[in-house]
Length: 399
Ligand SMILES: *Cc1c(COP(=O)(O)O)cnc(C)c1O
Image (tube, rainbow, N blue to C red; front, side, top):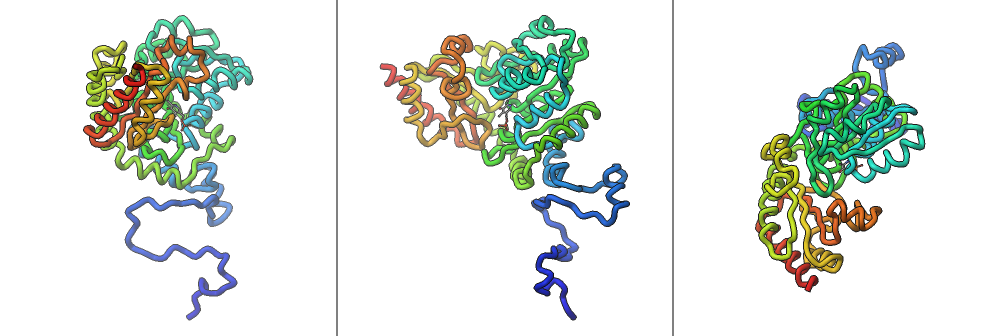
């Protein structure tokens, strides 16, 4: 008996998978860029959708599909698409569905890069844009134009955690025949499912809470209308927004614990908000479910008890106080991201909002003493100790 696979000349031929009646429990990572079909007839059948088969990884691969179907289940969506980043998802929607002459209306506190896409890139391509305050649906009525085709909003804003009137905005969009897109990264489907509140398209930066470990960059987009779904898919494939199979695999692994992580982080965020509110040197605490939050009633109506893991606060002492706080909390990453399994501290004035003038930041309430916390799953007592030390250091620096 000769074994073909043992012949040196055949080393470049891929060996078949070993026979096994049992199956792997864990999704295999499939890095293959191409998929071999039996014959041209079969390839025809694949391309024409009569049989299911992968062809080329840029057009789709098993790890992306497994991940997409899991997030679809969370969102109550169908045919969701995984792309290489959250911004790829935003770009695929705006560029894949709009044309020159259209107008798109955005929330005025969108994610920084979404604002840049709307402010710089879309106008260059002949798509006009404007912004309105999403906590006020009547502002969206006033901002509508005859050529308005799309509205892009986030439910919970960064970093002041204002809560948008999504049902009100959805009603305005319905009345004007405008597509409503919700970037739901901050709230996640654990807290809010935009399709149930009138959204046509839902976007996630999977990079954040869904994958949850700060080790992959990925995005997700789902559209209710199959024609829109196809336009987004075609644009993403043509412009090469392909996600890596390994990243999809990591994100699928991260999703296994999403509900556990989310629930624990949210419980911690509530307790930490309470704790910070009682510390001398803290000027204010922003958390959607707190009674002193400006959108408290809407947060309760839309999120119920799901206040989320994001929380912001302001200390005394300006920049010197802020420097003292991060230095006194060196165990905690001071970094501009969110949704990691561990708590992460960020300072909007020196990161996400650094391009704004001090006056514009002041107007948003983003002072030098303003911090955002992405609360993680640590022991709450440890977090309370860390933040007590940080706030005390800021207060001492304030003199
Ligand atoms: C991070 C983020 C994005 C962009 O996601 P990336 O994966 O970093 O490209 C978009 N929207 C919101 C609300 C985000 O927080």
